[in-house]
Image (tube, rainbow over all chains, first blue to last red; front, side, top):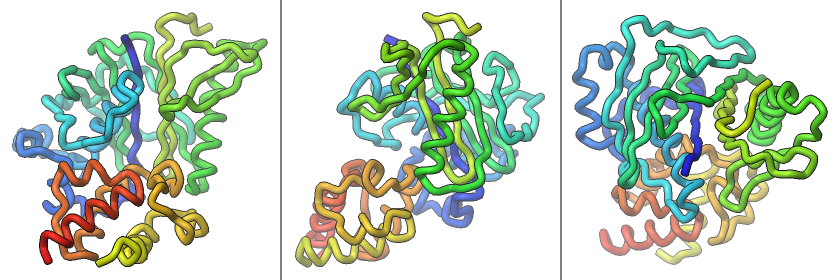
Length: 224
Length: 85
């Protein structure tokens, strides 16, 4: 059974000093994960970026798994990042006001994360402003669409509204004649309806600070 | 420390992380930190660290994962406070 999960961390909204404090990061980073920072390619990033990259992967993996196991509780220390690979060509991507990402591109930070007995794959973007992650059950990330948008007002109501508008605008090209609405499932993930009929498209939304992000899986539909 | 006293102190811990101050003033043990108070999950660890400082306790992995509602937070804090007393 497939699912989807994403997360975004706005680096302007985190406490950098606290992020570097062992008392903080030891609440969710395991010793084996901390050892990953010994690798030169990973240690090239600021430690707080490493900390929030791990958080972002864990949160995205939790959202993926929560859809499959509705009773799952978020236990970030039990979601363990196994590998982090940083491509030599990894660019410091600049996010415009709205950005749709070709997730099949190879220049992502990527790796594996284990949750319960399952293994998931992640792709992440890190730049000066944000860390964003999407997870999938296959390393190829086929049929995954991913967008990031910068917003002005950071109140949660605005974040929640704008990420939905961003996503629905994307779907206008898929369902040009449709009447699209989003509802929340009992578990809390978004469900897309077209003319009152559930589309079956798997969607995950995230927001933090001045950034929102959507991702969706169109494995069984055709994106026009 | 009674549950009511812990709840009172907990409001101070949660204040920096919720914009919904009206709901915070009226929280009950059933209030969910993320769904009701709209606290971003990225702040959950901040809340645990601040609660540790506020009550002079240590909250481990297993206890931290239970702290998703106000009532659960009070359960964990009361347990730790009583054990360190």
